[in-house]
Image (tube, rainbow, N blue to C red):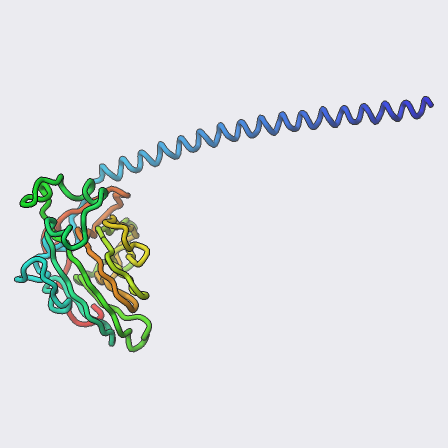
Length: 293
């Protein structure tokens, strides 16, 4: 009996020790979790502070000139035509702009230039983002937006036949503007940025629009942007690529408005930016109208 009692006491003591150890483990785990939460909270606060500093720095950065010219009034787009007039896209561009269907691509496309007072009647009513970040305050029908002096381009594009080498993808180059050379394309240990305002009114098929391509950071506009109203699109890359070659790619139909395209140095983050160029010789060389440029 004494041996059995000793065994029972030993088992009881072992169970009590196990309970004690389990309790200590739980206490240690709870303490570690608490410390982890405290550290995570501090790290999150530090990250938020760093992000705020970066955002503040990006907003304070000087804004360089636009490497594109004629992006405010598009004076050489639909030149001589009344605003609101749809013009065949191939007839709408004049230097420094160029436009062409590439490598067997076929389609029917028009371009219309608008001033801000015409937006609503063309289905481009400014949403809150566009009104608060780009347009001046609304005044009247005759002086629509206070201090707003820029034009909007509407591209109504249908590509019905693809390239000879790729029948499923047509390429319509629009707003091409030069092939400047540097130390080397796709080189440079500095940041460059591209941005624009877009509004997609129609989208069918595989067709999509790339308002910034090759020379500047890649921006894509497609069917996912349909009916979202005005959006500010931006992208950043390292250095400069080759030719400035915005284009429509694919097959189908797309109607999209674009305003205030900008290509320049630096990275201003999500802050809305735009600047004019400082003259043709500084910002770029004139485009060659031949296909592929």
